[in-house]
Structure formats: C-alpha cells, structure tokens
Length: 346
Length: 288
Image (cartoon, rainbow over all chains, first blue to last red; front, side, top):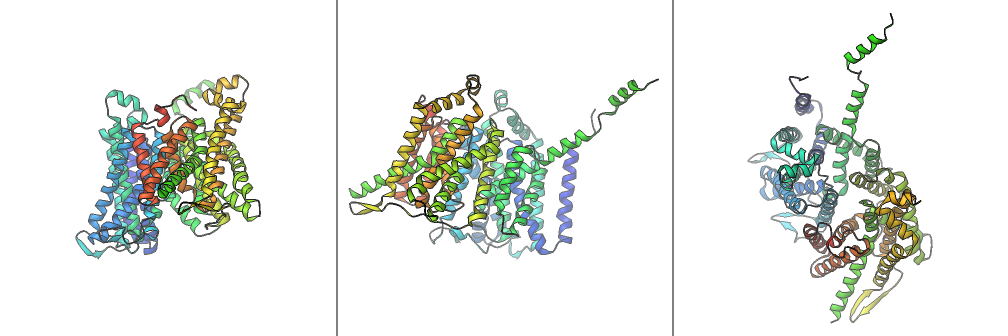
C-alpha cells in the first residue's frame, strides 16, 4: 500500500502552514506586551529545537545546550555594542557557538567517550561558563567597548535593526517577525537536512553506531557536525533571548536553562521536532504561571515534571498520544468482516 | 620558604576537599553505574542539616560530622525506593531522573528556607605558617578525607557487607542465587553514596556558606574527578583528586580561583581525550 504523499510530508506541510499562520496572524490580534511574551516562547522553542535535533535524531544527549544558548546571547550583546548594528551580531551569535561546539565536540567524539560522559562533560562546561561569566565583574573584563559586567550582566542592549541601518530599530512586531521567521526557517531547514544523505547517516548512527562505522562512515565526524549545528541553533535562540529582554546575564548559563530544553523535548516527545516546540511552549507557560505566585519555586515544578515523565511517559506526549490513538482505532476492516461472517449463525 | 609551606598546605587542603566532594559520587557511579546528577544537592542537604542543627543548639561537632551523613543517607534511601529503582540499567534515564531530583530539591529548599545564604560557625581557629595565617579547619578537612577513603577501603575489603556489595555489583544474578537480595544491596549502596555526599556537605558548610544553589558549585568538579579517576572507586578518586587538586590550586594561586577551576576542567578534558576510561582504566587496573 503506497500513499501518493507520505504522512511525514503531510505533517511537515501542516506544521509549516501553522507556523506561517502564527507568524502572520499573531501580530494582528496580540497587543505588544503579549507579542513580546510570544517572542520569549519562540526563543526557548529554538533552544528546544536544537536539543530535539541533537537528542532525537543524532542520539546525543547534551546537558549543556544552555552553554551555547548563553554564548549566543553574550555574542549578540558584545557584537551589537561593538558594531552598533545587529545584523553581524546575529550572524556571529550562530557562528561562535557552533565553533565552540565543534571544539568541544572534537574532544568528546574524537576521544570516543561514551554517551553518558558526553552528558557529564556538557553539564560541566555549562557550570564552568556560569561561574566564569559570574566572575567577570570589573572594568578589566571587556571585549572591545562591551563590559561583561559579571553577575549583573549586560543591560540596555539595542534591539534588532534593519540590516545596514542601525537607526531603524524594529518594534515588537518586527522582532516577532524575525524571531518567529527564524524558528520556522530552522524547522524547515532541519526537516530538509534530515531528509538528505547527511541526515540519514546521522539517524543511522543513532540506530546502531557500530554498524554505521562498519559500513564505512566516520561516526565521529558526523556526530561532530550534528553537535556543531545544534550549537549554532541554540546560539540563535540565545541571541533572540538577549534581544527580547535587552539584557543578558549569567542566568543564561544556568542549569535550569539546559533543563528547560531537555524537559521540553521529553514532554513533547523524543524524535519529533514539532513536539519539542510544543513542549517548549507548555514548559515556558508553566514557568510563567509559577512566576505569578511565590509559594512554589519554578525549578521544583520542572524537577517533578522531569522525574514523572522519565518514569511514566518516557516516550513523551506526542508519540504516546499517537500510540494511544492507533490503539483506539478499530482493527483493519477486512479481518473483522471475515471474523464476523464466520460467527454468523444460519 | 614560608610561602611554599603555605602553598603546599593549600594544595593538600584542595586535594582533601576534592576527595570529600567526589567520594559519594564515585561510590554510586563506580558500584552501580548510575550518574547521580543530584549529588550536589545531596551535599546541599547535608549542609542544611548542619546549619539547622547548629541553629537548634546541637553540639557543633555532632551537627557537622554525625547528623548530615545520617539524614542524607535516609533521604537517599527514600529517593532510591521511590525513583531510582525503576530505572536500573537505563543510564540516560537515571541521569534525567536524578537531574529532576536535583532541580526539585533546589526548588524545595528554596521554598522552605528562602534563597538566602545561611552561615555555619567554624569550630576551630586558625594557626600560623611562619608569617601567614592558615585555617585550622582545613586540618579537619584533611583528616576527614583520609578517614573517608580509609574507612571506605576497610568497609569494602574487611567486612562481609563490603564483600556482598562487591559481589553483587559484579554479578547480581550469581549473588542472588547464593541467597543475597540484590535490591537491598543496591538500596544500601545508593544510601551509602548519598550519606558520603551528606558528610561532605556538612563538613564544607562552615567554609562554603549554605544556600539552595550551593550544590552546583561542586558538582562539576566532582563529576570531572570521577570520570578522570576511572572504574576503581577509591584508587581512582584518590589519584584524580591528587592530580586535579594540584592543578587547580597552582593555577588558583597564580591567577584567580575561577581560572583554577577552568584549568581543572581543561586538564580533565585533555585527560579524558587521552584516557577515555580514566586513570584507573589504564593504570592500577586491579585496585579497588
């Protein structure tokens, strides 16, 4: 039985259409405050997407996506202060995290350390960056004319501007178009990448690393490239985050940031991209919700969700729901008919 | 001359601290192959136990040395029964679950005690090395780290419990067929590791300050040391702590403590690049 269009293509088209609709329609109905909130959701969704690609498709569980997210944020901040123009800063905020990821990936994948060690090392790098960025208070810690500011971070960052026109700042609507457009574009590019030869090799490595190696692929190289791509995407998320709030401080390197990305993917479902976006929206909504009261700390909630999902719903919501749906569906018709005709009494 | 004496003293203290913060993690990882990302929070719980006990007028030595390991071992026991035992053999899932526990504990303690730094008094005064003042409490840390390593060695080598534990970790089915109940052994091992983490947290509370997020400051160093140490719990912890502690203290002395930590990390990544199974994965392979 062959469908003219594969279900995978249908889901891709539906998600793209929905994303386009959100991109165009939301500015018409939301006021600037809500639109600004929505931009934050987009920033964390991009972070979650970087995790979803790395974990769900390349099979690498990084506990340190916050490291690249934070480097992206800091790169944007330093860039926009030094250049006075956001275009180059945005580009750098993807290039530098991707380069850092490549360097780190070289040590991890060419050292052939096990999956669990990758988790530990990425986690460690994140905590070290957190401490390092906290310790940069003082006048001597500056890059060009940008002062890193230690614990207080770098406030008062300029928002995005039109390319080449530093005076033409984008308002909330413009920022939304850039952010949501970036999310949509990354989703499309990732889906495209996964359907290429490279994407297939990456998934093959996830399925069986030894076999992929024996077939002749350099597993280390593919993992390195996937890790670097994911780092660049997370960096763009951090860049949008920094532009969203107009500030960046060491909290972008916090472990809870990496946790948010992992929990988003886990909630949405490992091995889907759109699930991670949905998961990111759900988790960020919960965090916002818990921010409105002061009894329960948000990280308590994230922690409990993480434990509950690992034990009870390890597949995530989206795959679990689709499994449930296919279970509830009636059995294929011909079989049942044949069965019934046998039972019919004369 | 005096300055080199002081540096040597600081290096020994740094190594001892590293041993203390690592040993609980090393027991849980080395014995059970569980990467316990809640390790830092177990230490944090130990520190809170000490701080609370001191506030309620408990003798300072009991509050620092006796209560934290007991309380945290009990908490570890409960968590093992409620969460960890469902996930044995699924390394990535245990990492995620223990990380969830870690975040949850930070949130819980923040909700209860607030996001403020408590302080615990130091029970011993300072002394002088030539013209330089040194903390007497550091001597307590050094002694405690020696006791922790030595005690663990004796427990593993000289007691029935240690024998059963090592046997179960090597081959749970065989141990079970000889009448041992492996779940109980796993449970007590996890509690032992948690207790050692609590021990470290209580001991370090006077010098680190007690706050909900204090665990994060230690956990990176602890992990790196465990990975660098390799499969042998005691020997690996000792050797890796010695190496990394030395590097950390020397760079800290020459620049800043944060750069010292960065140097430790870089050294560890280079080491793991060359010895993916840690020091004891290549050398001293038959040690414990």
